[in-house]
Length: 273
Image (cartoon, rainbow, N blue to C red):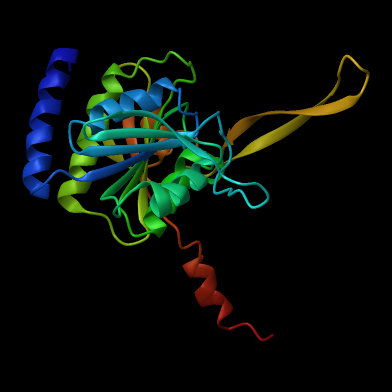
Protein backbone atom coordinates (compact mmCIF):
# COMPACT_ATOMS: atom_id res chain seq x y z
CA UNK A 1 0.00 0.00 0.00
CA UNK A 2 1.39 3.37 -0.96
CA UNK A 3 2.11 6.08 1.57
CA UNK A 4 -0.80 8.17 0.26
CA UNK A 5 -3.15 5.22 0.71
CA UNK A 6 -1.77 4.82 4.22
CA UNK A 7 -2.60 8.44 4.96
CA UNK A 8 -6.16 7.88 3.75
CA UNK A 9 -6.43 4.84 6.01
CA UNK A 10 -5.26 6.87 9.01
CA UNK A 11 -7.97 9.46 8.36
CA UNK A 12 -10.67 6.78 8.12
CA UNK A 13 -9.35 5.07 11.25
CA UNK A 14 -9.43 8.34 13.15
CA UNK A 15 -13.14 8.83 12.38
CA UNK A 16 -13.98 5.24 13.34
CA UNK A 17 -12.14 5.43 16.64
CA UNK A 18 -13.65 8.74 17.69
CA UNK A 19 -17.09 7.35 16.76
CA UNK A 20 -16.44 4.17 18.77
CA UNK A 21 -15.17 6.00 21.85
CA UNK A 22 -17.87 8.72 21.72
CA UNK A 23 -15.23 11.18 22.96
CA UNK A 24 -11.53 11.67 22.46
CA UNK A 25 -9.63 9.14 24.57
CA UNK A 26 -6.64 9.93 26.76
CA UNK A 27 -3.65 8.03 25.40
CA UNK A 28 -0.53 7.55 27.54
CA UNK A 29 2.69 6.98 25.58
CA UNK A 30 6.12 5.86 26.72
CA UNK A 31 9.11 3.90 25.38
CA UNK A 32 12.53 2.54 26.32
CA UNK A 33 14.62 4.31 23.66
CA UNK A 34 14.28 7.69 25.36
CA UNK A 35 12.43 10.95 24.92
CA UNK A 36 14.43 11.91 21.82
CA UNK A 37 13.85 8.66 19.92
CA UNK A 38 12.38 8.96 16.46
CA UNK A 39 10.05 6.02 17.06
CA UNK A 40 8.45 7.80 20.03
CA UNK A 41 7.84 10.94 17.99
CA UNK A 42 6.31 8.95 15.13
CA UNK A 43 4.06 7.05 17.52
CA UNK A 44 2.88 10.26 19.17
CA UNK A 45 2.10 11.71 15.74
CA UNK A 46 -0.25 8.81 14.98
CA UNK A 47 -1.88 8.71 18.41
CA UNK A 48 -2.60 12.45 18.37
CA UNK A 49 -5.01 11.77 15.50
CA UNK A 50 -7.08 9.62 17.83
CA UNK A 51 -7.01 11.30 21.22
CA UNK A 52 -5.33 13.58 23.73
CA UNK A 53 -1.80 12.39 24.37
CA UNK A 54 0.43 12.41 27.43
CA UNK A 55 4.02 11.28 26.85
CA UNK A 56 6.21 10.28 29.80
CA UNK A 57 9.45 8.77 28.51
CA UNK A 58 12.92 8.12 29.93
CA UNK A 59 15.38 10.97 29.52
CA UNK A 60 17.91 8.47 28.13
CA UNK A 61 17.84 5.04 26.49
CA UNK A 62 16.61 2.30 28.82
CA UNK A 63 16.62 -0.75 26.55
CA UNK A 64 16.63 -4.13 28.29
CA UNK A 65 15.12 -2.77 31.52
CA UNK A 66 12.09 -5.10 31.38
CA UNK A 67 9.94 -4.41 34.47
CA UNK A 68 12.71 -2.70 36.44
CA UNK A 69 11.77 0.08 38.87
CA UNK A 70 13.89 2.62 40.73
CA UNK A 71 14.02 1.85 44.45
CA UNK A 72 17.28 3.48 45.51
CA UNK A 73 17.09 6.92 43.91
CA UNK A 74 14.51 9.70 43.55
CA UNK A 75 12.54 10.08 40.34
CA UNK A 76 12.49 13.40 38.54
CA UNK A 77 10.26 14.56 35.72
CA UNK A 78 10.37 17.71 33.60
CA UNK A 79 7.90 18.96 31.02
CA UNK A 80 9.56 19.28 27.61
CA UNK A 81 6.64 20.18 25.34
CA UNK A 82 3.00 21.19 25.59
CA UNK A 83 0.34 21.98 23.01
CA UNK A 84 -3.42 21.70 22.89
CA UNK A 85 -4.24 18.04 23.59
CA UNK A 86 -0.58 17.07 23.95
CA UNK A 87 2.01 17.20 26.71
CA UNK A 88 5.39 15.44 27.00
CA UNK A 89 7.63 14.83 30.00
CA UNK A 90 11.08 13.34 30.34
CA UNK A 91 11.65 11.11 33.37
CA UNK A 92 14.87 10.08 35.09
CA UNK A 93 13.65 6.51 35.61
CA UNK A 94 12.88 3.33 33.71
CA UNK A 95 9.93 2.77 31.35
CA UNK A 96 7.91 1.24 34.19
CA UNK A 97 8.84 4.19 36.41
CA UNK A 98 7.43 6.43 33.68
CA UNK A 99 4.07 4.64 33.81
CA UNK A 100 3.92 4.62 37.60
CA UNK A 101 4.93 8.27 37.93
CA UNK A 102 2.64 9.32 35.10
CA UNK A 103 -0.39 7.55 36.52
CA UNK A 104 0.20 8.81 40.05
CA UNK A 105 1.16 12.43 39.41
CA UNK A 106 1.23 13.59 35.79
CA UNK A 107 -2.25 12.73 34.48
CA UNK A 108 -5.50 13.94 35.98
CA UNK A 109 -7.43 10.74 35.21
CA UNK A 110 -6.74 7.13 34.35
CA UNK A 111 -5.72 6.94 30.67
CA UNK A 112 -7.87 4.98 28.25
CA UNK A 113 -4.84 3.36 26.60
CA UNK A 114 -1.12 2.84 27.20
CA UNK A 115 0.96 2.65 24.02
CA UNK A 116 4.68 1.87 24.26
CA UNK A 117 7.21 2.32 21.46
CA UNK A 118 7.72 2.41 18.60
CA UNK A 119 10.84 0.51 19.60
CA UNK A 120 13.90 0.62 17.35
CA UNK A 121 14.44 -3.14 16.92
CA UNK A 122 12.40 -6.31 17.32
CA UNK A 123 10.92 -7.56 20.59
CA UNK A 124 9.83 -10.95 19.29
CA UNK A 125 10.13 -14.34 20.97
CA UNK A 126 11.86 -14.40 24.38
CA UNK A 127 12.95 -10.77 23.97
CA UNK A 128 9.57 -9.88 25.49
CA UNK A 129 11.06 -10.90 28.86
CA UNK A 130 13.88 -8.34 28.62
CA UNK A 131 12.11 -5.54 26.78
CA UNK A 132 11.59 -2.19 28.45
CA UNK A 133 9.03 -1.45 25.75
CA UNK A 134 6.96 -4.42 26.85
CA UNK A 135 7.69 -3.82 30.53
CA UNK A 136 5.83 -0.52 30.20
CA UNK A 137 2.94 -2.15 28.32
CA UNK A 138 2.65 -4.85 30.97
CA UNK A 139 2.63 -2.20 33.69
CA UNK A 140 -0.18 -0.43 31.89
CA UNK A 141 -2.38 -3.53 31.78
CA UNK A 142 -1.65 -4.20 35.46
CA UNK A 143 -3.48 -0.91 36.06
CA UNK A 144 -6.44 -2.23 34.07
CA UNK A 145 -5.68 -0.11 30.99
CA UNK A 146 -5.65 -1.68 27.49
CA UNK A 147 -1.97 -1.60 26.54
CA UNK A 148 0.10 -2.28 23.43
CA UNK A 149 3.85 -2.43 22.82
CA UNK A 150 4.98 -1.65 19.26
CA UNK A 151 8.39 -2.47 17.77
CA UNK A 152 9.88 -2.05 14.31
CA UNK A 153 12.47 -4.58 13.14
CA UNK A 154 15.02 -1.88 12.38
CA UNK A 155 17.64 -0.84 14.94
CA UNK A 156 18.70 2.29 13.06
CA UNK A 157 18.19 5.53 15.03
CA UNK A 158 16.88 7.02 11.78
CA UNK A 159 14.62 4.08 10.87
CA UNK A 160 11.81 4.64 8.37
CA UNK A 161 8.48 4.43 10.23
CA UNK A 162 6.28 5.61 7.34
CA UNK A 163 4.82 2.15 6.61
CA UNK A 164 4.76 1.07 10.26
CA UNK A 165 2.49 3.95 11.30
CA UNK A 166 -0.43 2.66 9.26
CA UNK A 167 -0.19 -0.76 10.94
CA UNK A 168 0.02 0.90 14.35
CA UNK A 169 -3.31 2.56 13.53
CA UNK A 170 -4.85 -0.73 12.36
CA UNK A 171 -3.94 -2.59 15.56
CA UNK A 172 -4.98 0.32 17.76
CA UNK A 173 -8.34 0.56 15.98
CA UNK A 174 -8.96 -3.15 16.57
CA UNK A 175 -8.21 -2.82 20.28
CA UNK A 176 -10.61 0.13 20.52
CA UNK A 177 -13.35 -1.89 18.83
CA UNK A 178 -12.72 -5.31 20.40
CA UNK A 179 -11.10 -4.48 23.75
CA UNK A 180 -8.62 -6.66 25.63
CA UNK A 181 -9.18 -9.05 28.55
CA UNK A 182 -7.99 -7.91 31.99
CA UNK A 183 -4.24 -8.27 32.51
CA UNK A 184 -3.55 -9.01 28.85
CA UNK A 185 -1.55 -6.68 26.59
CA UNK A 186 -0.31 -6.97 23.01
CA UNK A 187 3.23 -7.36 21.76
CA UNK A 188 3.26 -6.08 18.17
CA UNK A 189 6.32 -6.37 15.93
CA UNK A 190 6.44 -4.79 12.49
CA UNK A 191 8.87 -6.02 9.80
CA UNK A 192 11.17 -3.65 7.96
CA UNK A 193 10.27 -2.93 4.34
CA UNK A 194 7.17 -4.13 2.54
CA UNK A 195 4.41 -5.65 4.68
CA UNK A 196 2.08 -8.47 3.58
CA UNK A 197 -0.49 -8.19 6.38
CA UNK A 198 -1.10 -9.03 10.04
CA UNK A 199 -0.93 -12.40 11.80
CA UNK A 200 -2.01 -13.19 15.35
CA UNK A 201 0.77 -15.42 16.65
CA UNK A 202 2.22 -17.14 19.65
CA UNK A 203 5.67 -16.40 21.00
CA UNK A 204 8.46 -18.32 19.28
CA UNK A 205 10.37 -20.73 21.52
CA UNK A 206 14.00 -19.66 21.68
CA UNK A 207 16.68 -18.09 23.83
CA UNK A 208 19.54 -15.65 23.75
CA UNK A 209 22.88 -17.43 23.99
CA UNK A 210 25.06 -15.00 25.92
CA UNK A 211 28.74 -14.63 25.26
CA UNK A 212 30.34 -12.29 27.76
CA UNK A 213 33.49 -11.09 26.06
CA UNK A 214 36.41 -10.35 28.36
CA UNK A 215 38.10 -7.06 27.49
CA UNK A 216 40.63 -4.63 28.91
CA UNK A 217 40.13 -0.88 29.22
CA UNK A 218 42.85 1.76 28.60
CA UNK A 219 43.79 1.56 32.30
CA UNK A 220 44.39 -2.18 31.95
CA UNK A 221 41.34 -3.05 34.04
CA UNK A 222 39.36 -6.10 32.98
CA UNK A 223 35.67 -5.82 32.11
CA UNK A 224 33.05 -7.89 30.32
CA UNK A 225 30.84 -6.91 27.37
CA UNK A 226 27.56 -8.69 26.72
CA UNK A 227 27.35 -10.22 23.26
CA UNK A 228 25.79 -13.37 21.82
CA UNK A 229 23.15 -14.52 19.39
CA UNK A 230 19.54 -15.68 19.28
CA UNK A 231 18.83 -19.42 19.06
CA UNK A 232 15.46 -20.15 17.46
CA UNK A 233 14.12 -23.50 18.68
CA UNK A 234 11.34 -23.47 16.07
CA UNK A 235 12.80 -22.35 12.75
CA UNK A 236 10.16 -22.14 10.02
CA UNK A 237 7.36 -22.97 12.48
CA UNK A 238 4.12 -21.45 11.23
CA UNK A 239 1.99 -19.61 13.75
CA UNK A 240 4.96 -18.12 15.62
CA UNK A 241 5.89 -14.47 15.70
CA UNK A 242 9.32 -14.95 14.13
CA UNK A 243 7.87 -16.95 11.25
CA UNK A 244 5.41 -14.12 10.61
CA UNK A 245 8.16 -11.51 10.66
CA UNK A 246 10.41 -13.61 8.42
CA UNK A 247 7.58 -13.62 5.88
CA UNK A 248 6.95 -9.85 6.15
CA UNK A 249 3.82 -10.04 8.31
CA UNK A 250 3.13 -7.89 11.35
CA UNK A 251 3.09 -10.23 14.36
CA UNK A 252 0.55 -9.66 17.15
CA UNK A 253 1.08 -11.72 20.30
CA UNK A 254 -1.31 -11.48 23.28
CA UNK A 255 0.77 -11.42 26.47
CA UNK A 256 -0.68 -12.62 29.78
CA UNK A 257 0.84 -11.23 32.96
CA UNK A 258 -0.18 -14.39 34.87
CA UNK A 259 2.96 -16.48 34.48
CA UNK A 260 1.46 -19.61 36.04
CA UNK A 261 2.08 -22.69 33.91
CA UNK A 262 -1.40 -24.18 34.01
CA UNK A 263 -0.34 -27.57 32.65
CA UNK A 264 2.36 -28.00 35.29
CA UNK A 265 0.00 -26.63 37.94
CA UNK A 266 -2.46 -29.44 37.24
CA UNK A 267 0.32 -32.04 37.28
CA UNK A 268 1.73 -30.79 40.58
CA UNK A 269 -1.62 -31.26 42.32
CA UNK A 270 -0.69 -34.94 42.51
CA UNK A 271 2.70 -34.33 44.15
CA UNK A 272 3.25 -35.49 47.70
CA UNK A 273 5.35 -32.95 49.58
